[in-house]
Image 1 (cartoon, rainbow, N blue to C red):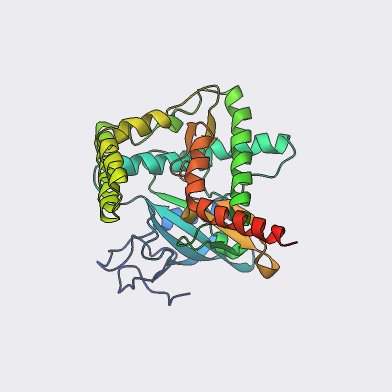
Image 2 (image 1 turned 135 degrees about the vertical axis):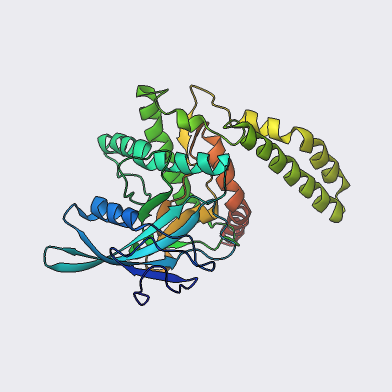
Length: 335
């Protein structure tokens, strides 16, 4: 834990510590976004009970350069007291970026908060009735979520030995299999839930392409720009056929993608929406046997067909899976 100091003093990029009752001071230009003490107190009571008394807390960097998360993600280490016992806790805090008038930030932050506080309890109830374990996602330290909320406190899964997979490498068959199984549990629970309340969750229909005119324009620029970049890469690689294909897609790519993610009842499920490698955590047993997968960063949760999640996920692992299957087939032919 970093040395405790009053808020408003000198801070480091990697840690910031304050005693309870001293939060809310000025922020140094080199410091990360500041966690609010009232949020720490509320999260602690929600997690440990109303009798928990906050003694001190410190803010610590959580992400690395290039992690590319939509929100600012940090962590807090907490020292608190319950009756005569002094205990420690740790939370991950997702904070809405301070970009003024960003409709996209508004959308994704509100969607994620609603997923944890509205959807997750209902999905887990369906799984419990079916004799299944709850979804493997971080425990949320909030009971409700409003538009003005800007700091989301979640369980720090590092304490349970979860780790991020190296996103520079394709997922192995074992990692991919665990992820698909957990997606299947999410999809199955959502089928039961949506059958009872098909129109109860309007926030699931929010997408970058339809949330507002601002996000729609940004979406169109993002997709067309990405396809133009892909076209230039294909040209540099000498693939003129691929260059022409990407160039022809660029003007209409946003419309094509919008049509693919549009709800299609009765096949809709609630999906993760961004099932990429760095939005997944894994825990390992002896000899690195993969035993649990935990999905996090659910800011793009959607109501759409199951193939949306599977397509996004397969892009992260299909190269490795294909080579693994080929290797296994070749090994089998040797016997």
